[in-house]
Structures are given as C-alpha cells and as structure tokens.
Length: 110
Image (cartoon, rainbow, N blue to C red; front, side, top):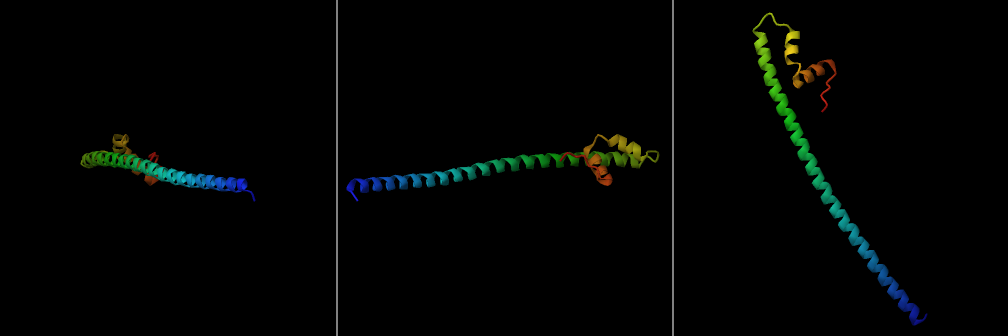
C-alpha cells in the first residue's frame, strides 16, 4: 500500500471521527434543550390549569353560598315550590351542574 493511500485513509478516518463526535454532541444538546422546553411548557400548562380550577371552585363556592341563601329564604316561605326555587337559581352554574348530576346531564363544559 502506498503512502498516499495510507494518508488518505488516515485523513478520512479522522474526518469521520470528528463528524461522528460532533453529531453525537449535537444530538445530546438538542435533547437537553428539548427536555428544558417541555418542562417549561408543562409548568405553564400546570399554572393555567391550576388557575382555571381555582376560579371554577371559587365560582361554585360563591354560587353555593347564594343558593344556600335562596334556599334558606324559601324554606321559611311555605308557599314556595321547587319550581320557584329552580327558576330563581337557574342562572347559577352549580345548581345546574348538581341538578344535571341527578339527571345524568351535566353540560358543565369542564
């Protein structure tokens, strides 16, 4: 084998080694950045979901308090019927949600 062919093989193997190592390093850093990006996105999703759930819980608590007040008021009035209570509270989502649980139709959109 001539010296020229040996030099070409050595240079080619060095180039292949450098190319393979740079690809390996590139893949490692891309994976690392992808994991960091996914973690950041998941934290943002968690915060949005947490805020959404807390807002719904506060809304349901407020509506439950309002419903309790309406029910306490109508409880002392013997002439009031269930239809009157439902018509007074039909705009409240918690009443509609829990009434839907009884009938099997929630329609809450959550």
